[in-house]
Image (tube, rainbow, N blue to C red):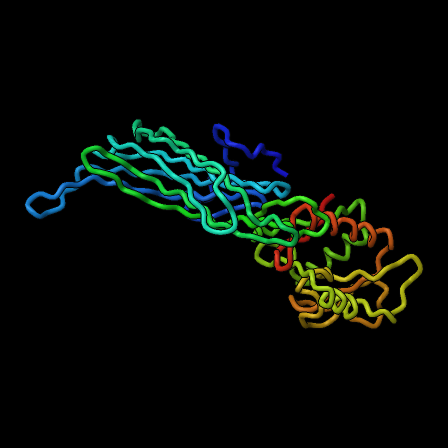
Length: 325
């Protein structure tokens, strides 16, 4: 977790990976970045013709951050003019944050500041509190910064920027507090190879055979539907199938994913998995099964529960499955 103090403060330094967010929104489970541009022009109308008297090109850094254990998130905006001529750099810039959806504005601060000098940064901060606080509630909120560029001789020009990336809820099983996350970010569920070697071997072979879950482009999707979970397990690991002593049947993709065997495809396995009647296969559809130690299976169950709680994984959220040391 980020561990940030989510109260008004003198700006939070965006992470280094924000530098890659030019023209696109990048994120993690508790933060997003976006770098956009803004151009301001001054002009006069002379004899019916528009004559440009100045121009300023600006970088705009949007950084929004929250915490899975808190009902508040921030959206700060930083603006800097990097090129200008004429009357444009005589202007001042200010801003106001507004909301649309299941939240309220806690704080919005962006006092009027001169655009000059080039390369100087102007900071605006806003904080929002979710209203999705009742038991079982899930809420989204769009947050908008409206920037006003004012020049005494030319009036005021306005530009708006919107982010709608955070979801807050009081519906995560095992969590007693409200929290906010970026639901489209596929967090990694990481199993330890040293702690659960048989589990790690099965998942590694399953993913190498083409089954999804290892990458952002091909994640797994959480399901909380009991009927789907049961069907995934029953199809991949039939109850009547014999288990070697001390072994338990493990299925991949996870039964708690929408990509399990109930979504279609065929069953597969691998050498050493103690399921001699099932062949090895490849492809993105289907599921693999392997007999692994009960200890590894119990470890996996505990890891899954902790992960879903910590990341506030609700039905339909993407996630990745990775193998660590």
